[in-house]
Amino acid sequence: MAPAEKKVIISIQQVSKSYQQGKVKVNAVNDLSLDIEEGEFTALCGPSGSGKTTLLNMIGGLDLPTEGVIKLELQELAQLSRMALSHLRRDRIGFVFQAYNLIPVMTAYENAEFVLALQGMPKAQRRERVMSILKQVGLQGLESRRPDEMSGGQQQRVAIARAIVTHPAVVLADEPTANVDSENAEALLDLMEELNQREGITFIFSTHDPRVMKRARRLVYLRDGQLDPAA
Image 1 (cartoon, rainbow, N blue to C red):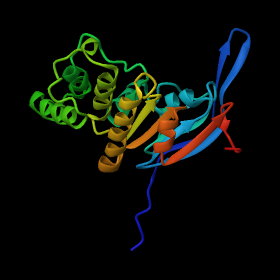
Image 2: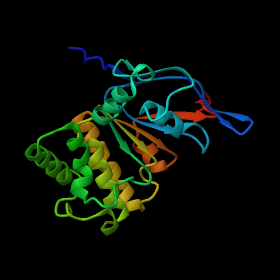
Image 3: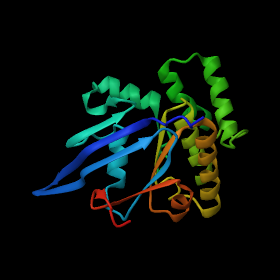
Image 4: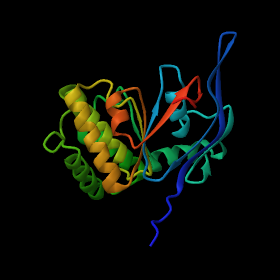
């Protein structure tokens, strides 16, 4: 029997993004088309200023294209209302940021639980889900620690727990290994690779870290806001 054909989860069609900096127009992404299939473990690579983070932010609906179409699970992001887009980000997309972006006054448990509370999940169900996820990411016993009581690697594990606790379709990770040492970087990549393979979550990284590029099963090279044909 032939293997089941994977479906396109993210469709990027002739997308451009420009910004105005004073009197200068900056083209961050320029007429870029790309499809990402369900279950991919893909890295967007390229030098600083190549458009990696801008593209990642548009895929996540944090920014919208100046031109072109981006669809997530067949929904065109630019056509959604502000509330619908917010709910899509909450329910279907996990974000892992370079600077962790944890809420400093909340514990590891509370940071991971927060989005489930926004979804209206009952407290007992939230607790079961969060404790299970924290165990998966190696934070069992650290549930009550606040971010300032944790190492960089531990904080990034909380960020990963928060990103996957809703069982999202896709996790977007912007330079997730940038602020951790080599040992923690490898451990975090082990964790994300395992989650990709076991849970089928699609991971898309923005990175110039060779360790991430080595692990990725697909590399998409960008230069000057476009796919780099020479890569």
